[in-house]
Image 1: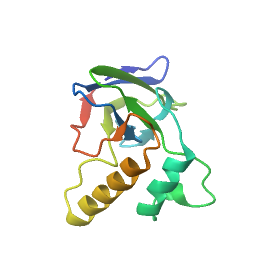
Image 2: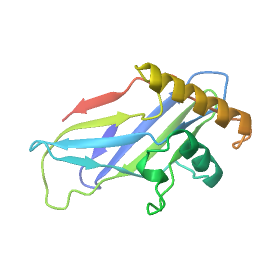
Image 3: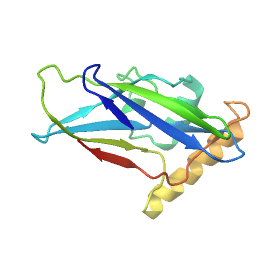
Image 4: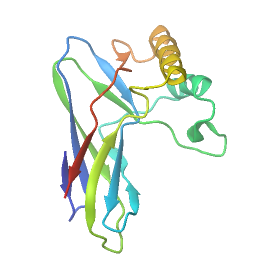
Length: 151
C-alpha cells in the first residue's frame, strides 16, 4: 500500500496466488489523521459495478446503507484473476491539510468472527456463486489479512 499525499491518493495491491478467478466486494480504505479524524477513500481505479449483483447483496444484507432507496451508489467490485496482482487506486479529500497518521484497508464482506456473520457470509456466497453473474469468477468470502500502515 502506498500513500501519495501530493495527489491525495492511496494505491493498494491485492495478490491472488491461487488457480481460481475471484472477486471482492467493496474493499475500503480509511485514513486516520493525527487529530483522530477519519477520511474515507473513494475507489477511482480498478473496480467495476453490477446492478444485479448489488441486488443479491441487498437481499442478504438488508440493513446495509447502500441498499436504501435514497442511496444511489453501487458497491465496488474488484476482479482478481488467477495468479495476478490487482492494483486499486483510492482518492481522498483532505482539503485543509491535516497530518495523516495511519492508512488502513479493510474488507467488509470477508472474515466474520461471529456465527450470524458467518451464516450471512455463507448465504451470500451461495447466492452469488449460483447466479454466476460474473462469468468465470467466484465471490471470495474467506478472511483476508487487513493492512494498516503508520506514517
